[in-house]
Amino acid sequence: MRTLPRVVIEPLVRAALLEDLGRAGDLTTDAIIGADQTATVQLVSREPGVIAGGDCARLAWELLDDRVRVEDLLPDGSRVQPGTVIATITGPARALLSGERVALNFLGHLSGVATGTATIADAIAHTQARVADTRKTIPGLRALQKHAVVAGGGSNHRFGLDDAVLIKDNHIAVAGGITPAVRAARAHVGHLVKIEVEVDSLEQLRELLDIGADAVLLDNMDADLLREAVHLIAGRMITEASGRITPTTAVPLAEAGVDLISVGWLTHSARVLDIGLDHVPR
Image (cartoon, rainbow, N blue to C red; front, side, top):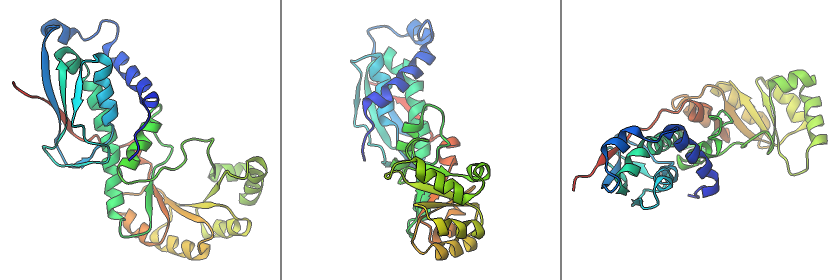
């Protein structure tokens, strides 16, 4: 899969290192580890999962000391089992120890996002549906988290408010209905900007079908209602299901025939993948 440009990830990794090192650096490591000591460590998975964030981990060490060497780093999207070696890192011991937590924070969190995505992608693989993320991301980490979703076999929804129109329930309420909201959006944006509208009933869907849109977000509908909605749409719009979806509930929703299933917890509540840093004795 594609990798994120260094210009995207470096400011985030630098900020994390600055936050951790503070004003005086690593007091513990500097006190007990000699400046000329070297060491070798390995990133090792403690549980099954999907890796993401390897470039962030590598950069955390390389920014501290350009003599650090990260070797055999598994590419993002790799599936691991307990005991899988993700990378071997060799270099000045102070840099390895001082960068450990920042490297593991990025790698564990983003691998958790990728692993959570994979649980749903695997569960619905027998259908036409794809799992997608949302804008419910940790502030500042959106590009990294959305990259991790792709690593886990998912698809990216819009990256921000400026790359697509998504007319949600509050927009509809304030605008006075679906029809005036869609008309206003069409008059405002360019011809290349897609318009998606959220509906939570078949009545709203029928109104949307009359005026048309590129995609419809079918919110909090059960599988039976989704199936009926997909039948009404008949391929005229991209269909997306959302609303407190789990790996278990995703299956019947996907089997209802929707194109996308969007899941907020993939990014805002991802469980960290347990990855450790083990010293390799000489």
